[in-house]
Every structure is written in structure tokens, then in C-alpha cells.
Amino acid sequence: MKITLLQHTSLQTTAHAIRTCWQSFDKSDDGGKKDRELIDRVGNRYKHSSTLEHLFYTFYIDGISRATLQELSRHRIASLSVKSTRYTIKELKDEKPFEKFDDRAGKYCVKTGEPMVDDMSVKALENLRVVLKSGISNDKAKFCMPESYKTELTWSINARSLQNFLNLRTDKAALWEIRELAFLIYENIPGEHKFLFENSLKTEKKI
Ligand SMILES: Cc1cc2nc3c(=O)[nH]c(=O)nc-3n(C[C@H](O)[C@H](O)[C@H](O)COP(=O)(O)OP(=O)(O)OC[C@H]3O[C@@H](n4cnc5c(N)ncnc54)[C@H](O)[C@@H]3O)c2cc1C
Image 1 (cartoon, rainbow, N blue to C red):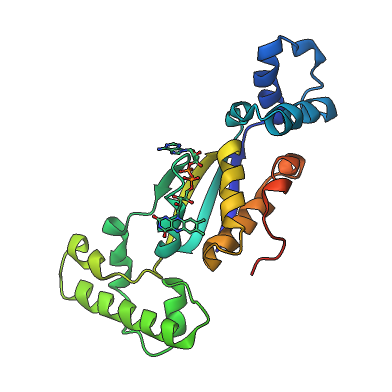
Image 2 (image 1 turned 60 degrees about the vertical axis):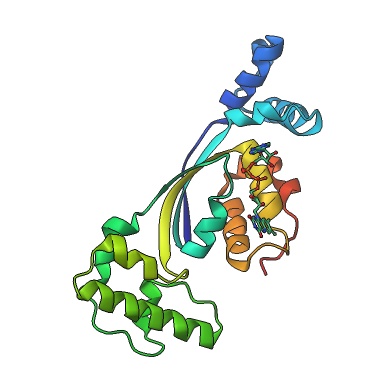
């Protein structure tokens, strides 16, 4: 999977939102040390967490399975725009038949490293290709897609909700792929924003 941070709100803007409460704009150092301490103190330590909702991040997430997409979409305080299978599974029509452990399947399906599961995934992919090739519409064919089928999306989330996401999904109890995603999201958060999320990580290692 590949994660790209497309845009984020500046700390200066977030500090400005917080300073609105006390009208202390003159104390700002334009997103510097003083502002960072203010954001940490008010947002994290004083639990005035709604102030963190002014801080937004937009990521492009490429190559997660639809199984993980289903879990990611349970995080309601976020916005998703997802690659539509209705319009795009025709991408399979021009493929030659997929064979056992076919490397070409890696373009379409997330591998688990469990040979039997990955083999069955390729079989499901081949079934889907056959259905599409027969002329059946995308709207019907998509119902036999494997959960491992890769997808991509633009994902926007505010800092408060992102703390919650990292807290739940870096935990050992989380599904391995969404856990991997959570750590990659954390890695892609701008360095000067990391102080807001360090305490949200439940574990250090990916798996
Ligand atoms: C290890 C693990 C196992 C899971 N297993 C299952 C499972 O078997 N089945 C299943 O269905 N789900 C499962 N989930 C999903 C889980 O129940 C949550 O839907 C998901 O983690 C999103 O969390 P959230 O609601 O905190 O996030 P968001 O939806 O982003 O909400 C963020 C916060 O906003 C508040 N909030 C949002 N909506 C409401 C509301 N309607 N009312 C009040 N407060 C609200 C809450 O404080 C919430 O924490 C699992 C999650 C994990 C991490």
C-alpha cells in the first residue's frame, strides 16, 4: 500500500482557532513553539479536544483491500471518496486468464502471505474475470469480487478523529492490514504535528 499526504491545515490556523476563545492572538508565534505548546495544552491536556477539529489532513490511500476499506469506513468522523468498482472493474476484461500463484494478480489483490488464502484469492479473481468477459454488467459482476480486491481512496480526517483512529487501529487487536495502514498514516503526518499523535499509538511495532 502507498500513502500520500495531499494537504494539511497549518498549526498557525489551529492556534488561531484556539486563541479565539481567549482573544490572545497577539501571543502567537505563527505556528512556532508557543503555538504548539498551546495546542498540546488545550487540545490534549485540558481535554478541550473540539479545538483539534480545526486541524485537517487529507491522505491518498492506494492499494488496501476492500476488507480493510470496510473497517476504515466504520470511522464515521472522516470523509472518503473511493474508487468505484461499478465503473472500474472493466479493467479486468483485457487480462489473460489468471493461473495458480499468478504474479499479475498482485496488481488487483492484496496478498496475505498465507499460500492457500492467496491461491483462493487468485481463483476468485479469475472467476470475476470470466463473469465480466461473458458480458454480464459490472453492477452484477461486482457481487463476486474477493474481499482482497485492491482499492484506493482520498481520506480526510480531523486531528481529534485521527487520534481515535490511531488509538484503535495501532492496537494489537486490530486487523493486520488496517494496523499497517495506521502506522503508515502516522509516518506520513508532518513532523511538526507528530507531538499530537505520539500518545495515540498503542504499540511501536507494526505486526
Ligand atoms: C479491534 C476491533 C474490533 C472490531 N470489531 C468489530 C465487529 O466485530 N463488528 C463491528 O460492527 N465493528 C467492529 N469494530 C468497529 C468499531 O465498533 C468502531 O465502529 C470503529 O472502530 C470506529 O470507531 P469509532 O466509533 O470510535 O470512530 P468514529 O465513528 O470515527 O467516531 C469517533 C467518535 O465519535 C463519537 N461518535 C461517533 N458516532 C457517534 C454516535 N452515533 N453516538 C455517540 N458518539 C458517537 C464516539 O466518541 C466515537 O469514538 C471493531 C473495531 C476494532 C478496533
